[in-house]
Length: 263
Length: 136
Image (cartoon, rainbow over all chains, first blue to last red; front, side, top):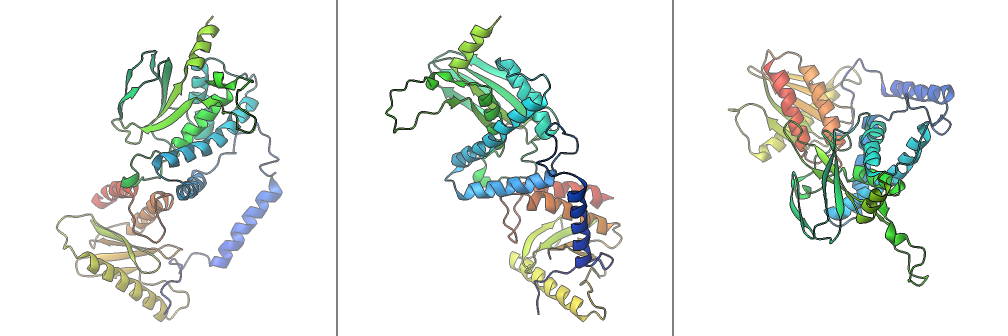
C-alpha cells in the first residue's frame, strides 16, 4: 500500500487538473494583458510590489545556498552582506532615477536620512524606526555602549563615527528562527549590505586608498576602496524582541570631508 | 479546549508534537512515534476502503472524552488536533495552524523539509493562536 501519496482532503475542492488549468489561464491573461517587468516603466511603483511570501522563500533559498559555501557565522554574514551589496547598488541607482530632482547626497546626515526614509520606504514600505548618532570620537581607546553589543574596545588611533538605523520588526527575518548553535547570526546582514552599497555609491568610503599612483606592481590587484563598514545586530527592547540595529561606521576621511563641507 | 497538536510528515513520521494542557498523560517519545505511524496507516486504509472514488481519509475521530481532527495539506502533511468534545470551529483553527506552519516552518531557511520542527517563531505563534482559540 502506498502511504506516501498525496490526497485532497476536501471533496468540494476542484480536481487537481482543473486547478492547473485555472492557474495557467490566469498566467496567460497576465502575459497578454500587460507588459513584462522589463517593459514596465521604471517610475511606476504602484502595483509593482513583490509578495512577501515570494521574497521569504527566495531569501530562505539564498541563505541555504550561502550556508553551504561558508565556514562559520562571520563568513555567512559576510556572504549575506555581499548579496545585499548587489541589491543596494542597483537600488540606489533606481531611487535616484525615480526621484525627479535627484542629487547625490554628500553630507553624512542627509545620506543617512536618505537611507532611513527613502531606501527603507521603497524596500519595506515604511521608514526605519529610528536613526541615531552613537558616538564620534578621536580617542585612542573608546568604550562603546550599544544595547546588546556589550562593551567593545576600539583601538583605532583616529576619528570614527558610529550611526545606528533601527528597525523594530525587520521584514527580512520575519519568518526566520535562528537555531541556538547559530545564535550570533543576524540575517539582516543582508540589509546591512544594502546600506553599505548605498553609502558606497554615494562615495562614503575611505578615499585615501583610491590614489591613482600605487606602488604595487601591475600584477597584484589594486586594493579596493574600503567601504563604510556596516553590520547588523539584534538589540531587543520591550515589546520588540526582534529589533535590529544596523551599525554604520564612518571613517576619518569622511569626517574630515564633512568638516570641509560645513558651511 | 485544545489538548494537543501532532504534525505528521508525508511518510508517516512525527515531526512535531505539543500538549497545550497540563495534566495530560505523557507518553514516551517512542510511543508518540508509533501513534503517528499508526494513524498514518489507518488514514491511508480509510481512504482506500471508501466506496466512493477519490475519498479523503479519516477526518474526525470521536471518543467519549476527546475528539481528534485531522487536516491533510495538499503535500500530504497531516495536522492532528485533539480537543474536547464541544470545541467549536476546529476546522478554522486547523487552517490557521496550517498558515502558521507555512509561514514559520516552510519559510525558515534552517528547517529541512520532512524533518522534526525546531522553530522558535512557530512555537511562539502557535501558543498565541491556541490562547485565542483554545479559551473561546
